[in-house]
Length: 386
Image (cartoon, rainbow, N blue to C red):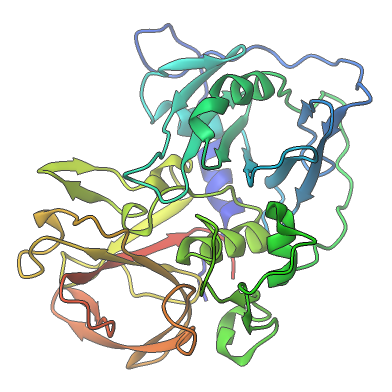
């Protein structure tokens, strides 16, 4: 059980002084929050008070999170008239420390409406399911938004126009207790991405919620089979991880291939893992001892990252192959094993035990996939309570 709380991390960040500066660097300037009437087509988050103007035929589904911090919320937007299978997810981290966390990203490269912003798209080559990614600061709201679909690149202008309508909570906003979220099953996940009403031969349920395999993370979520899936995203290993983070902690979608969640090398160049799109202070990274020095022992709730590299003997710095890698959720540990939940591995080992060994440089987890170029890169801990 992790002892770090996202609320604690955000509170610590809030102790940092906030300021504004010019375009040469440092903290970004954001416009003051003003109170405006709420239009009929405007979504207002009952937990954090932020709002967005929805285009005609669009709907919003909020996600307060089963165990989320009171300073984190997320929403999924969908176009009821759209025939393609798209996913638009917006996650908000709200605290006085968020301007400082945003400043640590460096100088913003663009604006979303009045807000300083960064672009970190994950398109083909680094993602199976192409995603537009925008990160911006609106007052004390750190916003991470993704638009994922096969034709995501063509939606960039529409995406930014939508995000430009974002407004932080009005000064007199009073939060309301959100209803308890209901975990979705495999059929509902398909429906949400536009496969509802279609007779499918894929997406078979492998494990329900609750299930003993979730161990310390009870009640867990449904695990679905990827066999025969025609979709770019359902049911990849990253789908399970994103659904878990979203339903449990109201965290935004983490786009890109599994291998690139953690820091990686590609063609001799070091790239930061996509998890670093989250605010500084809301995550921690630990290398497997075979790839460096472990910062901490794995525990339930961590994300376990596998990379396929050019030279396994040389480790992760030899660079990624064309394989997307793999990711799993740590459901528990004991003295000798790490227990994981995973999708798109096979239909019988969706829950699996991997050997865990204490060594001089920390902890080593043994991969059992049998893939010759696969390494255990490390694990990511999101600083939320479990």
